[in-house]
Image (cartoon, rainbow, N blue to C red):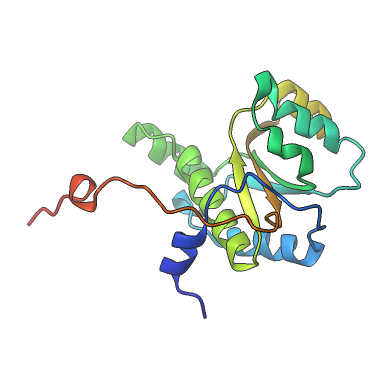
Length: 180
């Protein structure tokens, strides 16, 4: 079994995808595992939409994510998981209000990490897309104006020869403070 550390070390933002189609059962498993992620007061303020290559508006979704020349690699991505923010429960909303925290955004971030790590476990690459044109995405997804897409995750097999890059992170002693 792969350790969590190995998953974290191997997971990276994939920016070179192969044309190989991702099996639907893998995409469903990714979403099922991600749905187990913790959320404030178990509010689960999300809905995950699996977008497949046969979806007639997938090109529009890609275009919405490629605004101002960003993300040209998405031309080869055939599967996306569109993360929509839904309403949390009142307990979570009250907790967020009194703590001055956007708990839904925190919960969606945790969900996104689970999606990416679950995909890594399935042998798939991912890239989180946070910069996109909301109106175009809503139109491509047949959503009304009041629905809120917060993140789009590109999912697929990495291109042959796509290597895992060495992680460059801040030094642990610079970001970890032990208070005793």
